[in-house]
Image 1: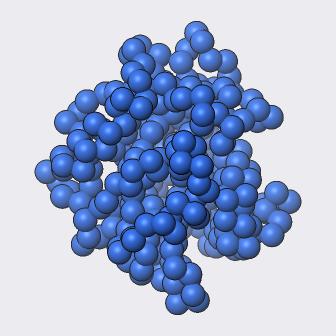
Image 2 (image 1 turned 120 degrees about the horizontal axis):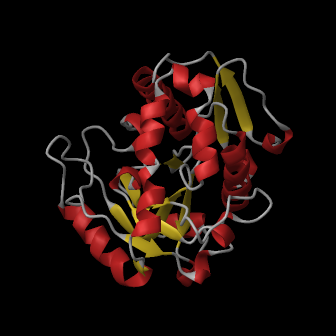
Length: 270
């Protein structure tokens, strides 16, 4: 579900359309004032009355709606349903030589599955402003392991997501090997500044949220990048074992801040 996010939605449709077929994509626009652009041709699209008037009510209303829609898709015959935000791309490690549906079909997913989350930043002084006409991973090379983006994005049966797909209510989470969720929402300082001034987002209370999440740019610019292949296994185990005291079915990471450089083999995926 999106609102005023055409920049990311274009990339989302392009990527998932190639992986899954546009006929299997469902995009819901939050607000009757939204415009459905031509890059959504072939995708199931629907405009809705605007959900909520602040960050909390909007998140809760969205996830209730999307959990219900997921249940309807299962009833229509789908075996798996993936839920993501428009700035989130789920990728299989290219070293496996498998597409996303091939990889998921090879697994026995009983309830839900979580990719390991990586939050991309902009390394100031090295990486320029993002351009739409160049693949993201040709322009951004550094990401922070983040529990917020190790999400229960993939369902194998009707379940109720928590806000933002961060968990499945009443169920544990399972982090897949060689599967990653790349979050690009705060990977460009110019776009963060623009979002923080967006009147619609300011009105709904998003400014504090945006300012807080923009710390990823500071971290990838300041911390030494570690080896991706050496650290992903450690972080996956850590997030599988550690749980925050307020939510046993979410991953924890003991407040560690680990930045990695993304290997070249990923660069043509997104």
